[in-house]
Amino acid sequence: MKILSIFFLVLITSGIAQGQNDTIQLVNPLYKANDTIPKIIYSENSQNQFLGVVNGRYVNQEALISINSENIDSINVEIKSFTFQNRKYAAKAILNTISTYTPAFISLKEIQLKFTDIKNEDIVIFSLDGNIINEDANKFLLDEKNIMQIKVTPLDRLNYSKTIFMIQFLLRSPENLKKVNTIRIRGYNKSFE
Image (cartoon, rainbow, N blue to C red; front, side, top):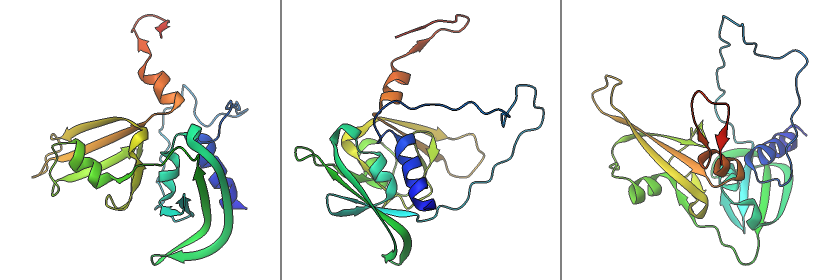
């Protein structure tokens, strides 16, 4: 049941689930404006909670998020432990796209070589919609048709012998489209869309 809850949480927060997102205001907020001590959060190592299957092709769970929700025909979840390529999974999310759409899956490494000047041997940190990707860049897949923006930042002030690059991907979602198409002017309480 925990896996199913996590899966639906991922779907809702990623934009695959359609409809209005409601928000809940906490009675006792976790963060307050007058807090003076930061809360330290250590991310857990990524676990293989579920494996994605898109039109019969096995993909990482994040590849499901990269598909535009308008192109999804159905999603089914099979909660049953299994092993795939020497990794254990607790469930399988099976997604079928509409008949007129075929995702163009591409690995992070392939995106790096196709769209940037960063060499294959350079050190790269990837992020997707603001979240660091802690996976093998050769196996992590995204739907190329739904990548809205690729931002490359050289981290050349870290005092390492070699420059590290940050490649940030922004998917084409309603939230991201609104964010990039909004102009904010400092000192004013209005935004122009």
